[in-house]
Structures are given as C-alpha cells and as structure tokens.
Image (cartoon, rainbow, N blue to C red; front, side, top):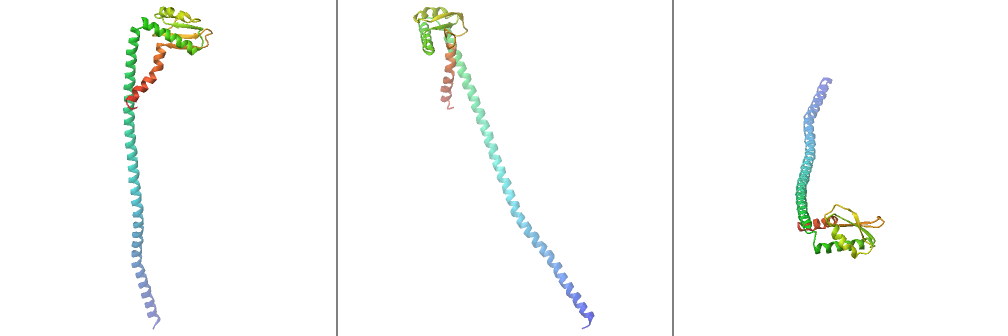
Length: 197
C-alpha cells in the first residue's frame, strides 16, 4: 500500500471517528440535558409543594387571626355592654339610696357603719365625718360610742361615715360611696360569670 492510500485510510478513519463523536455528542448532550431536567423537575416539584404548603400555613394563620380578632371584638363588645349595664344598675341603686337616707332603718345603718369603723380602726377614740344631710342622724347615734366625736367638717358623699383615729394617722372610709366602689368588682364578676366570661 502506498503512503497515499494509508493517508486516505487514516483520514477516513479520523473522519468516521469524528462523525461518530459528532453524532454521539448531541445524543450525549441530549441525555445530560434530560438528566438535568429530570433532576431539576424533582427540585421544582419540591419547591412548588413547599410554596403551596407555606401558602396553606399562611392562609390558616390569617384565618385564625381574623377569627381571633372577631372573637376579641365580640368579647370587647360584650364587656362594654356588661359595664354599661353595671353602671345603670349602680345609678338606679344610688337614686334609691338618695331617696331612703332617713328613718329608723337608716339610723340603724349609720350605727352599723360607725361600729364597723371602730372595729376596723381598733379603737373607740375616733373622729367621724359625714355629709350635711346625715349630720343629725350621726349626732343622734354617736352617743352610743364612748370616745367617738363628730367633726364639724362635712364631706361630699351619698351617706355613711369617714372615721379617723384621733391622731389622724389612720382612717377608714365607710361611706356609702366607698362601699359601692368596693362592691363593684364583685358585682361585675358575678354578672360576667352569668355571661360565661
């Protein structure tokens, strides 16, 4: 064989191998691209599922927040109504008290309030203050309590007494106003419990 034929065979062989490589290269590239696409498909599906799951969580969270806000708003409205009702009840009670601050039963109430004041302060040596309207009633019952004196100064209240020790260091507010204020939380609690709150 001549060197020209050898050269032709070598060239043919190189061309066949090159052609084979060229044909294989797109197939190989296609296969690699398909593998990449397949593996990315799984990743994309996972990302998609994560986005959907996060969206559901956010939706549920938002729903709970909206429901919670509605419940809170309803509870607040109910509390406002309860408070308004409590205030109306107290206003009616105060009106009735204003109408009934005279007579034997009121005199007994004043006696009881002074006795409670003596007991709380731990001494009969007290100075009693009251409003202008109750001054005569207090004056008539204070003689039952040795050591107790009636102050010339009056206080602004519905009725009842404000007692102080003679040294003025300790006092006990036993006015009808303060008794009502002490009762309000108990009455509110009782009313609220009837509404299931």
